Length: 275
Length: 275
Image (tube, rainbow over all chains, first blue to last red; front, top):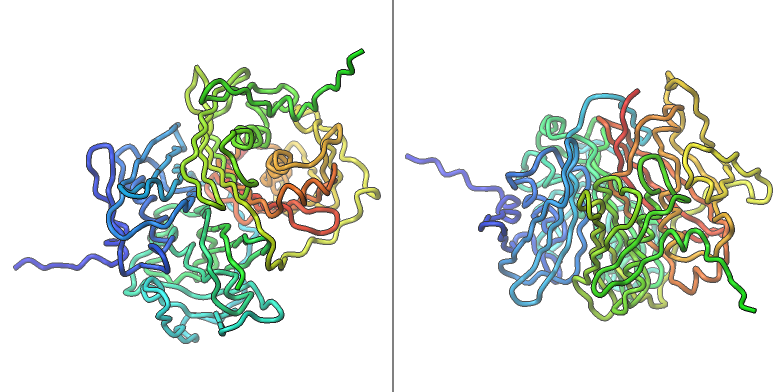
């Protein structure tokens, strides 16, 4: 008898099929957002196309994804190019396009071979109540992707109403996050979790407004071995914003291990509309 | 009699000549760093190639530059591609290559049309002594580019010796910066100043070690009109690091107006070697 182990929905969503020099992916309804796929899964899919390339060496160090247009339901093509490589780093470019609609995302990724040496972490994890002591955030039915994660807010839970607040609320939140069902952490899950913050504008205004990430950059601060030792997490995710101005706002995020190691920092800029 | 107004060295260094669909630039000895041009000037040159493209609309919103290899002294080619554009944003890709050596940098840039609306700045400028009250930092003769700026440290001035410190020093510094000679601020100067921090590893270890920026991302938070009102600055530049680990470290920077408006945030990851 053959035992069938069902693939994790995240692995289904980020699956990349190689057809010669090109790669092909397909959107996942499980990770659908408002008008397209959840950006974190798109970022992870682009990274996966590099990680599974036979010419890839080293672990992800930096990933920038530019969301040019909403990806439509269905399949998409990925053009993966290694621009330059030396002994310790590789530079890659990825373009996501669809037969109808053209280019929907562009990305660059840097792979690096890490070596032991000086180690020092000036950043400190904020104090947060332990994962076990917090209740899971009630599942929102606003977007499918949210149900693929468990969120346990330690600070700054999303609290929205029908109207914008008169006075802006805090832009900071921190929560524990892990996959549902649980899944061993890897660079793909970090790339995705780095975009799993609710838009800062929702927190500050206390209501939902049209919002979209325009550009997302993630820096990875650990290698594959360190990441594997963390098992299925959970991850403490912290996000804040610096400024909301003339239709655009930033977000600065950090992903931490329970033990207080900084795993990744993730930055983005996005547009928002007033209500 | 014709009056000749000499171009500012920064404008000479970032000059881009258009030859059909391609652009051509040339390295500047005035902004030379250790083994190649100062990365900030390279970033500004790539941005300039987009800004001067006749198809460009809107102001810079995001710029990511990946430094793949040292740029050699002399001329280089820029391939500038508009990947996607809609009413409010444009996505561009830029590749810098040299006849010998191949691709030395890749970049993506987002242009955006900003509109009035909700404005809120959760980030606050750190307290810093006023520009006028501080002495200019003594010019270092380690690299030419440093002499193209005036630095006035308010906190965390570079203090290096022959040997690494036994205990890591602070990774934070803040200083006032402006061009020498002064030059009206624009997106190009912000793009460059965002890389004008001395490597955090120099501060932390208290000595010079081999270091190079691998990837640099800048988010711009103002439009051209707001920037023009700031004249020639100065700019308060603040930088810190989160982590140094296994040969790579990050940097998170902010560029502020004297009045306390956040103009740009700039992030990077780079390699360092132990001594």
